[in-house]
Image (cartoon, rainbow, N blue to C red; front, top):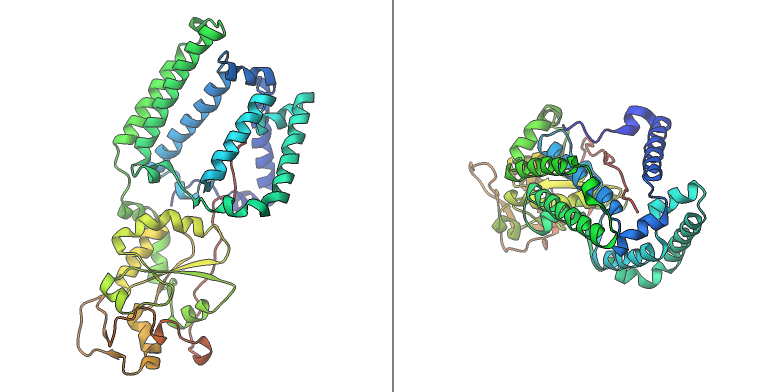
Length: 413
């Protein structure tokens, strides 16, 4: 298992974690102050093409962090799936960015710098921070009036590699190159509009840029880790769960969970399309085994909600177990396997469909559907969603919900 992000609350407890968070926040504010970012005229100069110090610092921090995040993730030192990624609300985000940009131009602050400016006693920073608070309150009160607009372009945890169907390394290299070009154009603008002597800028800045290009280029040329390689890293911690059958859930327990309003089960059926169309448990989503990696971002987004539990299902257990390995290797929490698969499920519940679902006799290869069906009704058989009150099946409970180890929020204004 990748050692980072660290489970801070588990290591330090709540008091220690809050002390650490305060120290990080204080350090961030202190750096902004000594860098001069609490002075609105300095921040506003970039909009007049006279001083791009803010662009260089902020964009420089972004590309350094981006390169290190994906580099350490590729090396197995960081679990990227446990790093908070702000969910995407496309059109509200575009509109909100436009409004914030107008406010930045007029007031000379972004929300973060305004708070630091207010703390050090600058009058303009205090008024800007109060305006931010007022805007937050106004948004909360008016949200019901534009709720549909707010949610109709929700994409969850969406990243550029997913949008452009490429690797994080390629995106990192392109963003680094874009930043360096922006820095070069910014310095040209500073020299022309701000009459700034660019020759006095430190030469090491281009060496640092070259180092980032080399690191990002190496990352772009490196193939992403395969699901098998990711599983091998977590196998020492997770393989015992399979050997102890701690994640194989009895059909009786799954039935109770399907009828439990306090839980939100997600069923992933990895069988062939033919078997899925013949019969599947109601609500199950058909995802072939080779497409499991594609649904990881969606599942990570879903498991940010409380009481979500995931079940992977196959005809027996072999393919479901492989799917389980892929998901836990991607740090998807609360994943379980239907014990015995659909074949075991139907042993308990096929009688409600007497004459339409019958067991087949003989020996069959693994992952063979050992039942015959009168029709390909999918989830329209009674056995697809049995009445839990009609069954009293003894079982040993296995499902234990765990909270995600990653943070629940983040970002910088």
